[in-house]
Length: 375
Image 1 (cartoon, rainbow, N blue to C red):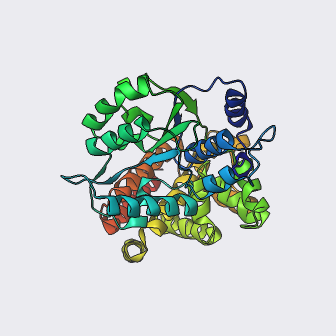
Image 2: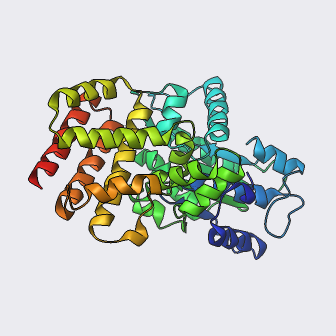
């Protein structure tokens, strides 16, 4: 991974590059930001730059042996730790090698993916994941050995919020006082779930969400979609590049149309068709269900902004602007739009946690119907 492969974020890239150039890099870094941000990719780009044999002024060369090994995530002095299925006993070496190989494949395929994506990638559904005390011991053991190439060793911990308390406590001392030439990188979107004793021992690298322009430019420049589709996807993704990638192969115009029809069914109090729509929603795969709720959430956000006359913040395309204008104020006032926004968030939360999709959709439809009736 190179910095050039990551869209935007010039201020964070410059900070990291200068820290390496002027030897100001702390021994423990915490990359934290919202889901779908460049937490992981920035840490990998930093490691690539750090080991590069022919560094340019602002990036790694991408062609030397070290860069090529980092691209495949097989740099011998870079160790990885991440959540796996909780077991009473430590995994054997074959299992460890297999899951590490799968993690490398996952990161290569979905560099902006989250823990849920990793679970589905490995078929870990309904399994408890953690980073065990045994895994912490192996980290300490790996860092106690001499580096393969006589330079720095890196321990990259992805999703450290899954550290078992005993594992986190076991790592406190080595994070605070690591062996010479050792660098910790902790990657998370849930910094609030980390122990304060871990947080206090790291230098925080706040990674902001991507802007609409950064996502749009990235999707167009990489040939993933045309400019019009990219602009609409960027609006719906709301700074989350994971969502943007996931929506590439979907026709977002159809989803917005589906949300419009859904709202109209609720406004007309057409219960029969609402229940039929709930059946169709239940039969969709989970990612499509989440995407539809996300689209509804963003449409509700646009309605809310329109109600407050904040047209300058609207991100709806011209084709969808008329629908937003018609429903705002005439159908949903400010208070009802706020409550509906909260209802969409709650529905998305319950769906993420494997709630019954049909019940979630039906309950949300009743909320929409009631909010529209109160107007």
